[in-house]
Amino acid sequence: QPAPRGNMAVHCGGPGSLTLCNYVMALQFDEEVKSSYNIIGFDQRGMGRSDPTFVIPECAAHMHADAKKLNVNFGNEQSIRDAAQVYKETHLACWNHPGFQLGTVQKDGTSKAFHFLEYSGTRQLAEDIERVRRIFGNQQLSIFGISYGTIVMGTYATIFSDKVNLMVLDGSVDPNSDIVSRELDDARAKQERLDYFIASCEFGNGQCGDTDVRTCLNDVSTMVDWLGEEIGDWLAPVRKVLEFFGMQTGKNIVMTTLISMIWSDFSQFSRVCEYAAKDDYGSFMDWFLAMLLGSTEYEHDLSLPFINITLGNTKFSFEYNTDSKPTSSEHADADWPFEGYGELAALTSVTQDMITAQDMAFGAYDEDRYVKFMHDLHMEYPGLGTGMPARWVQQWYSACYYWPNVTPLPPIGNPSMKGIIAGQ
Image (cartoon, rainbow, N blue to C red):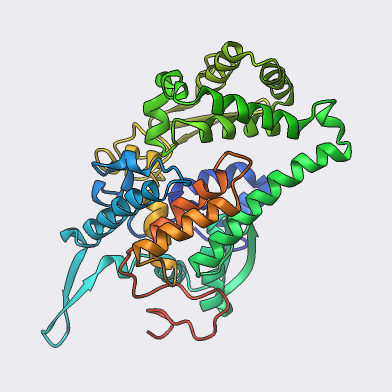
């Protein structure tokens, strides 16, 4: 239907947000905006209802038989090497999956082969958005991107600048397609953020009270080191959950949880500092498990296939995961658009990994170089004992490890970038 201000293409990030982004925007926009635009979302190539799909076990490293090896001890080079083998085997199995070998018959009767994983990255999504723009009236398109969606819409605006009406990029992501420099920046930024927070308490930040944050973290680190292998037994109730999400049941997860307390509930942090100062191991362990498992029950508001949301005194009910409604990957129990999709998409990083692997210019193709990069990065940016910087980098850098990429996404703004519609 015609809209007063035309069409708006939206992408909420991920990669993997899918057409449910339409509902996200509907909640953010006021009535004037919603009544002024047709809002268009996408199940981008390889996800949701798009076919072929790369949401398959062969492409998900955490579904590998040796997935436990992804719980890396970054101070141990052999541990990093074991993880590299899992990533390598996963990527080769994914690349060689028969479902990605496509072919077509040309007008002259000859056949031509295509590999889907060379044509399903961000650049191709930008070109698909242009195809949709043409179908929907060939008028200028307003674009709105959040997080990874800023790369999507920035790429579209780079290739099709004369087709853009208005553009909003919210929570911009680094568009650099050099995975090494990007992840070094990521690790450094996380380390500096942690360092600055502790320093701000020492400057006299009133929220920190009288707690000596640096001393507290050192006390906790010393206590956890003293506990040693007992931590594994102690974390037994949550071991499977932690391992599934790639978190090592050791010191890293303890320190990461503690840092989270600094940012979310400083009263809890003060209490655990007292436990550490008094070497009260029992109280500390009880507190930690309570933080991980939670002490109260809650009722979520997502019930397939409806989302029920209350904002103030207003209630909204949205239908999704049906033939005529948006697709979501947010619910692990969702068998839509096919059985097991929700578990793979929501509980693994497969959608993020596949797009990152295709978009980055180069990754690591030598095991020794991979090991050295991750080990040295962790030594330089230990994250106050949490391993947080290296843990973050592990996913994105590893997505590009031993990936047979031949068509990376050049940096946004590169005038020589070409695509299927732009001239390739």
